[in-house]
Length: 406
Image (tube, rainbow, N blue to C red):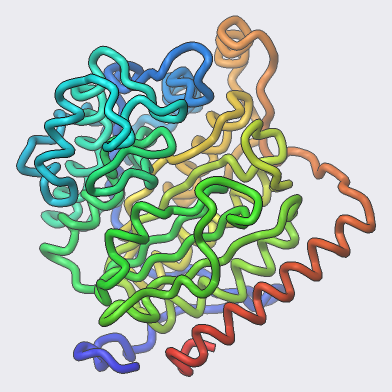
């Protein structure tokens, strides 16, 4: 499968390899400025006290970043404006936007379900969440920079329907804006749930390569993201799904990630990377059945940052995504920000922040690098066998479409 811009894609990047692991090491200079998006208005995106998406995770994450000394001259904190109707229509239909504006349950549009109930102010709150990712994309068009919208990553929303806690698909909106400058956009989704909305929106688009590594749809919402979902028409081969077995561990994620993601970078040669950094893959997450630690999560983020530096000049738009264990989300996203800054995550949690967390949540947070959770020999065997079968089928699907990839 060849592209019109094949020549530009085939220029080799400059990189060295780790002498121990043999993996690429970033020796490209990435963008110097990182824009961090946060506003207390993000907390208005609130489905109620019994809903698993607790907006407190955002304020606690930002406070930990602040108390950890990360808000300095390398960073600029921005409060986004709500997305305009014109911007929302880049992805969503006018009928759907109007249905959200009415703020009334309408299951034809996915509004009022148990997952995505309607609440007063949902239209303004949803526009604000999307506004951060949209503004970040606009800045990345104008300057070489990176950005992190911790409230973004609402990857389940469709053009005409809300789903899975997501009203407006800020990921797809940001990608649509990035397409004004970039012709090769790589979307990486490491959330435990398959990024179905983003996949559908760009399923026929060869300028957007979507990759999702997630708990298999055999076990988890939304029940999609299988290896044979590979794109359609001109987009055939530009959609890659890696469904993981239940209880997959750091080792399993490392094996799967390294077997696929560096190949995608090397083949596609992205000009910019959008990454959904959901942390509901953690073993403590109440909605999923995976077994990743904070160390395993940080390793995937580190590789995303390294590979983006090698192939895309460091242009990375990071989005928060899922994560429903309050003790995990703030240290995970703070570790991600450290890595975006070119620093290793720290094991230290500021005492004032730990006290704040304990007072708000009622228990203590986890800290990097975390501990492994044993799952038993027989379960490990089952996971290994299922993953090996999945990898074989994934390679078979994409080798038939694009022999250069596998």
